[in-house]
Image 1 (spheres, helix red, strand yellow):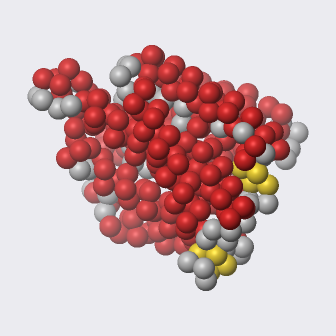
Image 2 (cartoon, one colour):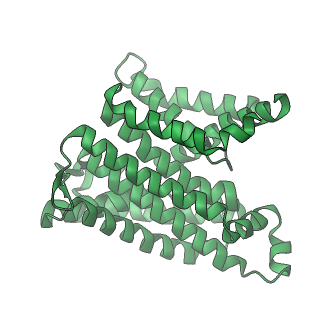
Length: 312
């Protein structure tokens, strides 16, 4: 009964109602950061949780979306939606190139290829003149949505970011519950059997990789507008590791797990950032990761689902 409620429309509408009220209770910029990383983690989870492909290069797509959006909006005064579309398109193209080179490999070799490619992008962004180097892109304008709605108001911007997140989440949900998504799960469970059934596994993997990259770029483009800044932090391999932590902590292969994981990680970072433990945030996050792996390997959402299934 509890499981039915968690998957019911009433529960979804309840969550949406809470999301609409949140900027009147909490700081909107913090909430927008959570939503951006929740979309990033959900996009990564599509690849890891539902295809079984561990990528260590997703930071490249996050940063590419942010840099392209920031550059074109700063230099050419594009509207908000056009800037985000360009950033997402650039990340999609980069994802296609990465995918073409990486999906032929499996396991740790796939992870190392994506890491190597992402590091190439990182060093490119250090040298490229349009990125601002180590200073990054600063003062990125939020622009006007459809040329009318001023996005400089944080609450207005929050509702736009929420709409972007909901679109991305809906797309992921539809993907994993479609026939295409069922094939992806079959590949994750038993790739040789999927091949024997006649599926072109490499094409399915490539398409999943490109979708994940596109949504990661969408998250990066939106994040750049929220903070009006894009820096090398988003392109660093630490960011690729951070999204792995969010996904595993929340629950790999679950729908809501990456959202919970992103909320926990961003919340902890925000809580410790201004205090005396600010220099030890990465150590704290590492300790949390170790505890997660040792005590609840299914993540927060996975353990909760197991508890509900066994007790209700």
